[in-house]
Amino acid sequence: MSAPVSSIREPLILGHKTYHDITEDLVSPTEKAPPLSWIMVFIPAVALLSLGTFAVYWTIYVGIGTWNLNRTINWGWDITNFVWWIGIGHAGTLISAILLLFRQKWRTGVNRAAEAMTIFAVMCAGLFPMIHMGRIWNAMFIFPYPNTRGSLWVNFNSALLWDVFAISTYFTVSLLFWYTGLVPDLATIRDRAKGLRKKIYSFFALGWTGSAKHWQRWEYLALVLAGLATPLVLSVHTIVSFDFATGIVPGWHTTIFPPYFVAGAVFSGFAMVLTLMLIVRKVLHLEQYITIAHIESMNKVILATGSIVGVAYITELFISWYSGYIYEQAAFFNRAFGVYWWSYFGMMFANVVSPQFFWSRKLRRNVTFTFMLSILINIGMWFERFVIIGTTLARDFLPSSWSYYSPTWIEISIYLGTFGLFFTMFLIFARVAPVVAVAEVKHILKTGGDQYVGEDAVKGH
Amino acid sequence: MKNRKDIVYGVYSEEHDIIEAVREARNRGMEIYDVYSPMPIHGLDPVLGLKESRLHIAGFIYGLLGTLTAFLGMTWIFTRDWPIIFGGKPYWAVPSFIPITFELTVLFAAIGMTVSFYVVSGMGFGVDNDVLDVRISDDKFCLAFDNAEVEADEAKQFLQANNAEEILEKTLKA
Image (cartoon, rainbow over all chains, first blue to last red; front, side, top):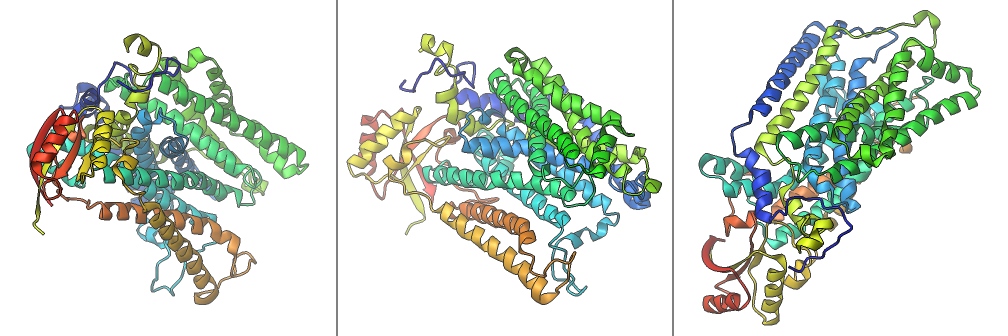
């Protein structure tokens, strides 16, 4: 063997795998009947999806009056959930695109699942603005197409329209990136399959042969798409933040929003990747591919982005005081000590305090602790969006119209329904395609496998 | 042109063995039909004499097309087709066109490049290209010679001398 050996780098693939072992381990879960653990998660996921479907149906049938939004608070759980889900999606693009550009090899263990997560999260997110329109059958009016109304065009100067373009582009590019990465792995499944299964996978594998020229183009495509997706993902949450920042409402009208939203999105996205991958790793027995080293790397990203978010919160407070502008000061006083004080302190604890535990290497490498913290961060980031939307709107310009808002069971059901959609999609994906990128893991075997790098390598070589 | 190709190919298990064999074949001036692998082999392209892909140039052109579509489209709509004043801003409010112009640049480049990739590679939904060996998508690397370019016996001798683990023949529909 002539592969380079390093005793310093931590291995990313454990168990002295060969190429064939990798194929077996990663593809075989799609070839067997679903295990009981899968069914146990799938049933509640579909149940939640059904609940959500009913709630969406009811919203459309009866109208937005089924929600508790009022004249003062006209964005509630719907837009909170929208921003939250979009944020969740960002980790997938960060892992697959930005870490590809930075040549981070550990991305191969988690990129496929994270990209799938991005796509499903954006689908969940897209639902909310659509049903919030009230008349969903006119939803296509948001796209500029020649029409019999004039042609009456959309307002290209509006941040809300920028959002339409940003999110539809983001969804499309993520889908292309994910599917193109998936093609060689679908070919692997095709070549192992027989009968009808072979025919189906043959259709979706697009005629992949593994030719050198195709691999060359495939790598080029991945690289350029990564280069495009990187500014794209930054633009998406920047534009989502413009939905607020271009408004004149005190508490929204701040220039710090774009970087702060992007950092928050990556922060919450990584938390969701960890929540999901720690379960997948356990259920599908992928401990040798998603190692403690992977978890530690992701926790470092959480620590970094969590700290950026913390700095942003404190900067916001400082600037509102330093501005000397009493309405700005009042808005921030209301956030912390107003009617929704509990969501502000929940956010501060979960997003600012909790990631600081990851300064400890021991805790970064502790699976149970990471899992609990990832859920806490998900909750904290939901609170963040609610703080920005709910508390700001509840105390608007006229004290006579100040209001309070809590969701109806319909709104709660729609939110739960998006979890149902997300997990149903993810579970189906885990059954039909490998959740870890097979070809990409093979590609790093000789630089990341534990027979080539790490402490064992020298001894075993 | 006949529409079938008779292929002689050698099977390898290690990247560096097949790279050595490719280098040797090129030194001898033998025409290689193709090299197949379960994942990209880095360092193979220059040895095999593959030219750099022009996909990124196509991507740039598609992107430019997106930029122009978005910017000129919005310009036409807001200055010619239906000018409306929004918030006292000029009709031709260039800064607020930037986000959509950027998004469409990315969208056009990404879709264009992906479609080009599949078209030039002869791939697509339902396309049923012949697979040389089913183990290629698992753990084997194959070096293939077309009988029309290299005599079958010569290819077999070459593969034998260059550490191929197995030497096989297959007819592919071209």
